[in-house]
Each structure stands twice: as C-alpha cells, then as structure tokens.
Image 1 (cartoon, rainbow, N blue to C red):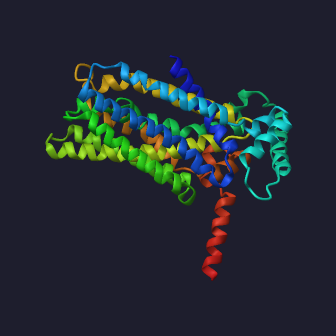
Image 2: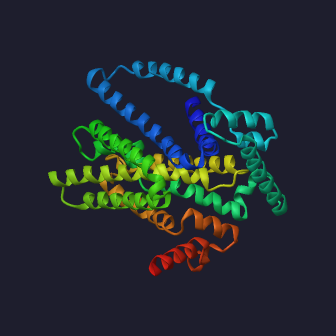
Image 3: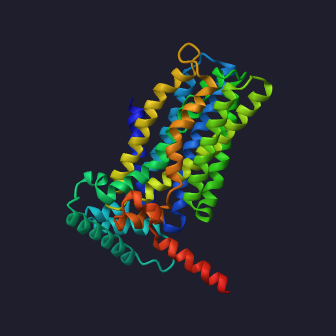
Length: 371
C-alpha cells in the first residue's frame, strides 16, 4: 500500500515537474525518458523473476532485498533534485526561483536569469488574471470550460492504453501467455518488454522530428490492430502457426504501447496551462490508474479457463472498447486543440473549423508550389 501511494504521487507530479524544469528544445526527449525508465524497471523485474523462477522459485526474499539498492539511488536524487522554478514563481519565492534557474542552466553562455524569471512571472500573472476573469481560481477549474477540454486531451492517450489491452498484455501478460498455452510465458514477457525498451529509446531521439501526435496515433492504431488480430486467432483453428502469429502481434502490441506511453505522458505534461499543470497531470494519472484498476479486475476473469474462458478472444473485447479511443486520437493535433480551446469552438464543430496551423500549412504549400 505504501509503495502504491508513492507511485501514485510520482505519477501525479513528475510529468509536470519535468515539463517545468526542462529546456524547450529537449523537453520532448525528457518526457520520453520517464517512459524509458519505467519500461527499463519492468524489464529488469521480468528478467530477475525469470531467473529466480528457474533457479529458486520459492525464494521470495531476494527480490525484497534488492529494494535497498533503490533506496540508495533515491537518496542521491533527493539531495541533487532542484525545485521547479515555475512553482517558486507561483508561490512568490523569487530568490529561490532564480537560484534554481541558475542551477538548471549553469554552463549556458549569456543566459539571462532575470529575463527567464520575468517570462515565468508574466505567464503566471496572465493565467491568474484569466482565471479570475473566468472565476476559475480553484483547482476545480480543470473541469470547467477550456481547461476542462484540456484535461480531456491530457488524459486521452493515457487512458486509451487501458482500453487497448494494457492489463491483458502488460499487468497480466505472463498469466495471459500461460493461459494461451505458451510453454515459457516468462521468456515471452521478457522478450516483449525488451522490445519496449528499444522502441522508447528510438522515441526519445525521434519525437521532436516526427511529433507526438503522429507517434500517438500510429501507436494507438497498432495496439488496436494487434488486439483485433489476437481475437481472430482465438476463434481460428489452433495450430503451431497460430501460436507464432499470436507472439508476433503481442510484440507489435508492445511496440505500440511503448510509443503510445512515451507520447501520452508528453501530452499530459504539456497540454495543460502552467497554473493548473499539477492538477491536470494528477487527474490524468488518476484517471489512468482508476481505469487500469477496473480492467485489472476484469481481465483475469476473461482469460481464466475456470471463469469466463475467453482466452485469446479477449482481444475482441479490447478491440471493441478501444475503437472510440483510437478514433479520438486521430481527430486533432495538440497545437490545433490548443487554438480551438482558446477560441471556444464547440467540440462537434472541430472538424469543420480551420485553424491557424492549417492556414500556415496551406501558405507554406502555396509558397513551395510557386518555387
């Protein structure tokens, strides 16, 4: 319970923190690293449990002892980690904010600390004035008007993971592979998790080139297709070939979840306003956890031979409930959504509204055609 509380607090605050302390040019990669370390930890866990299961399956104390190493690493982080300058500005701690700005940008030639502080202060004052004008000064503002739609956008990609099989392939992946009849489910789980690490590394270096939206849309679609194919395999005649196809699309699903998670956490950290970012990130993480809890309760019943006995046909369930989330992901880019929110365009008119981004692209295309 204590560990779960800590993880929940981490998910609710870390993305906003990364967004606030990272320089704009590397912010995308830094947000992706959150997903990388999360995936790496899962991979190490699966490899350790695989080894322990083969050598000493009843030795449960050794995994517990490894937590001491984590405590040592965390102690170092606690000493070195600076406070967010944006938060310091929000609570009126000017000197502390400037001190942390100097720490974060040390070594950067001709960096103007005072100018950076002024920009942060102006942004905070603007958002406070806007909140007062709209009477949205409390944290409940994340559910109202423009900020409410920002909150939906921030949580969309993350919650989509839960409705596209995260509990099936992730949390209960080993159990699912076992119920599907695979001889060594631990090994398959280790392979799929290693794929996630590779994809996240590629995402870190490619996110700013290809963009979060394209990555999120393609990844979400790949997850949905994988769930659908797994469901089809469940009703097809079983053979050795069908097992290989199942493993292949389990790998594809893991590629999708890695890219989706990397892009989704980026959405959560960046789409909200600076003043409400901690609350928006916290709510998005909570929505992700609650939907994950529901699916984690249902999934074992779906795949268990003594319960609902759906096994591979569980893929149909996730393909069905996940389809609306896939469609929603493809609708608009974050930049366009930001403009539509500010202009207070109704959601059902999004598809007919021309945004500044679209006009800019049309202008660029026209100039390129003239050349």
